Each structure stands twice: as C-alpha cells, then as structure tokens.
Image 1 (cartoon, one colour):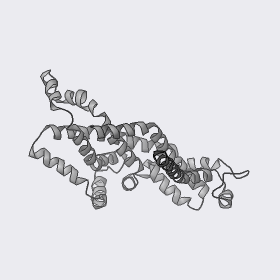
Image 2 (spheres, one colour; image 1 turned 180 degrees about the vertical axis):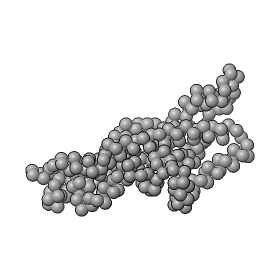
Image 3 (cartoon, rainbow, N blue to C red; image 1 turned 90 degrees about the horizontal axis):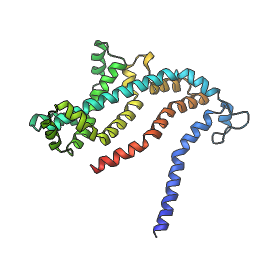
Image 4 (cartoon, rainbow, N blue to C red; image 1 turned 120 degrees about the horizontal axis):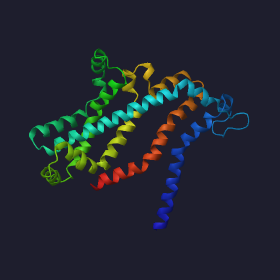
Length: 272
C-alpha cells in the first residue's frame, strides 16, 4: 500500500513539475526564435533558420539592463539591511521592556500591516515630493516604514525564546545594551533574520507600484524597465520574451543560492 501511494505521489509530483516548468520552456525557446519561427510553431524548439541570439542583444540594450540591474540591487540590498537592523533592535526593545506602552506599540505595528498602501500613496508621494525625496534614497526610507511592521512582528515572536538570563549575565560582566544585543542576542536570531531578509528581498525586488510613483526615469529598476519595455514591444514577441528572460535570470540565480537558507530558516524558526 505504501509503495503504491509513493508511486502515485511520484507521478503527481512529476506532473506538477512539468506544469510548473512549461511556461519557462515557452518563454526560453521562443526567445531564441525569429518572429516567423514563433508564429510557425510556438511549442517547437528553434529550428534551422529560426534560432537567433540577436533578440537578447537588442533587448539588453533596450532594457538598459546593467543600469536597471544596479538600481534594483542597490535598492534591495540597502533596504533589507536597514530593515533587518532597525526591526531587530525595535523588537528587542519591545520584548525586553514589558510595559503597557511596549504592548501598545507592538499592537500599533501589527495594525499598520492592515492599512492598504493605496490609501496613503497620494499624501505619501506629495509629502516626499515637497521634501525632494522622490528618488531611490527616499524609496528606501519608505520601505523601512512599510515593511518594518511585519519584520518587527516576526523578530518579536522569536525574541521571546531567548532567555533574559543571558542578558542579565552579560550585564553583570559589564556589557552595555548594544553589546548585549549585537554580540549575544542578534547572532542567535540568524534563522529568523534569514527568513525576514528573504521575505523582504522578494517583496522589494519585485515591487512595481511604489517605485513607479517615486523613481525618476534614470533610476528605474528591472520591474519598471520591464513594464515599459513589454508595453513598447508587445507585438514583437521575440524581443519581449528575450527581455522577460533577462529579467527572470537574477531571481533564478538568487533562488539557487538562497534555497538552502530558505529551508533552514523556515525549519529552524518552526523549531524555535
């Protein structure tokens, strides 16, 4: 019975894998075809006289890929580092200082997650425009405000599993609050830090709406460049699919290197 169930589960997993990979197959194979080759057969591999790499050369230039990739990397990395630093420190302060005020502040952070972005985007952009912060640095500051609530909530829940006796022992040895946090507490938060980092990396890297309201054209990220590129070449599928493939490659590379940390972060967090 167990062998039969495993067999059917294996078949089901194989079918789901094929279904999941099929769109990638369509995008990748057709990105190497000429327009004539795409309309001749969408499902077939590029044949003789149909395969070409000029699609990628043209899309690479049209997307300004190096510049947009650099902007995406800078915004994502700096925003996540700021979020991890300030969210973990805030969660530590809220968790270690048991009072009505800290409880009210935590509930305020949690309730902030329920506020739709669309309700604040107009006054947000108006105020930041007056402060001349409609650029990538202002965008990073906005991400700290919008994404800190979930990060603080996750950190605060994990922080409770770290005994306060460790803080007290370090304090008796002469350590101050910053030394206790950065040398003792923060290293023990590695699993949840990985989880928080990955969640925010995915959200910030793929974000379109907020950057579209904030960033000038010379600071466009990959999702923004891809939106306008796809709109411009929507009838030229060979160029559109090549550009789409280029935009997917960084995400795939990130997932390949981060998958073991994703699994470890989730499992270690569950154990805690």
